[in-house]
Amino acid sequence: MHFDLKRKTALVAATAALAIAGCGGDDDDGGSGEPLSAEDYATEIEDVLVSFGEASVALGTELSSAESPEELRSGVDELQSLTQTAVDDLNAITPPEDAAEGHETLTGALEGYLSDIESLAEAVESDDPEAAQEAALQFQEAAVDVQSQLAEAATQLEEAGIEPPTD
Image (cartoon, rainbow, N blue to C red; front, side, top):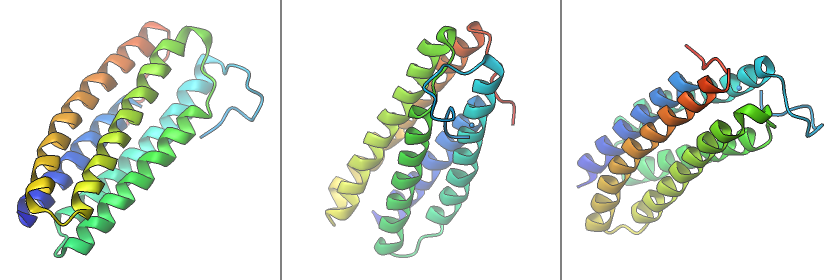
């Protein structure tokens, strides 16, 4: 159980991170609450998402080499914290009016991913191997859903004239 859960968690974290990095920030709009220009908005989300993606990939590598339940718990907690920071940073950005729908889809996808990580963290903390295994499988399915939502957000942002990041 432990080995399978560890591998699945690492794979899902890395896969979701790559999808996020490919779709998309500095973390605020200067506190004005005014919508950003399309160019500034694209820069902001790129800074947030590329940073999040790179850190998530590195964390996925660490998770894949976890040798104890404590290391796995720590990695899942770190992924949870990392994702919360990205969500907070995105929520601090005021998109241009045309990009509001895409921004909402983007933040909603990451908020859902955060909820999925929280469920996984609870299962890992329970020390119940069956619950943890089931949570890992559900987390895999959730990562696929997140990738789909991120692709939808990228399309919506492109339609609004926002160039998605290419890094």
